[in-house]
Length: 134
Image 1 (cartoon, rainbow, N blue to C red):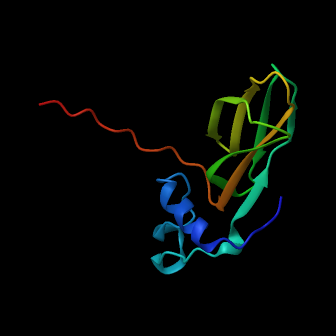
Image 2: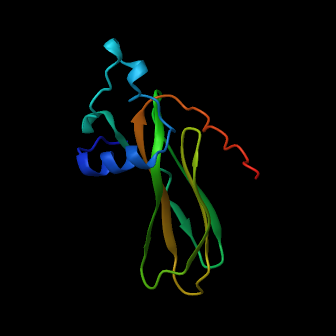
C-alpha cells in the first residue's frame, strides 16, 4: 500500500461515498465540528495482480488498512495487445474492493488487479429507503 496526496480525488471520493464512511461526521469530532479531510489520511491500495491466459477467469481484491473504509475503487488492466476482458464483478466489499474478470481473447495474456481508495472511518449500513405509496 502506498499513501498519495490526492486532494481533488479525495474530495470526489468522499462526496461519492454517500454515507459509507463516518470519519468526517461532525458528531465524531471534538466540539461537534467536522474535520477537514487531509489527503495524507487516505490510502490507495492495489490487489493481487491476476495474470489470465486466454479463456481464463480470475479474482483480485484490494483491502483497506485497519481503521479505514473504501470510498471508491475499480480495476486496472495491462496486456500486450488488444484488451479482451469481460468484468463480471467490480464492487466494494466491507473492507476494500473486489474485481472478477475473464480473458475473452484468444491470443494475449491479460493482467488485471483491483484498486481501492480508503478513508479513515468505520463501516456503517446505509439507511433503508422507505416505500412511499399514494
